[in-house]
Length: 152
Image (cartoon, one colour):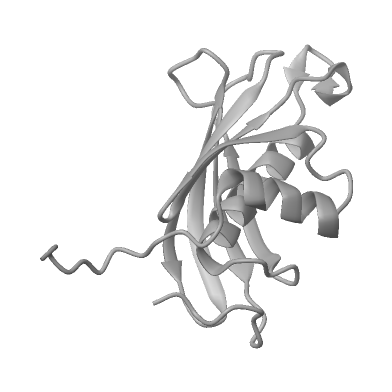
């Protein structure tokens, strides 16, 4: 008999989340690739495009904020299932260094999923670099009535 574990399991795969977001928020996944989801984690790549550059040749802050928001949303959906009404309630970002004009990869960690809030961090790296370019703390509000039963 396998040992009991309290570790939560994902409800949706990367492909299922991509399909769901494309359905409920058309165009939202045009710039992003969900590379991986795991319990309480996700890795999301924002594809580089010239329109993301600000003067000086760096990826713009709003682009990095969008990646942080999307990364946490992906990790949350993996855990709670198809819930289109979960929304950002807080996003705080630190810009650590100039991101290269390249893809940016977000590594997301959820720390807590409660009945109404989910809290996590997103560390972002320019593709191919080992030093982060930004870090965000993100909180998501979860509607009180979900389509799926609570994680547990």
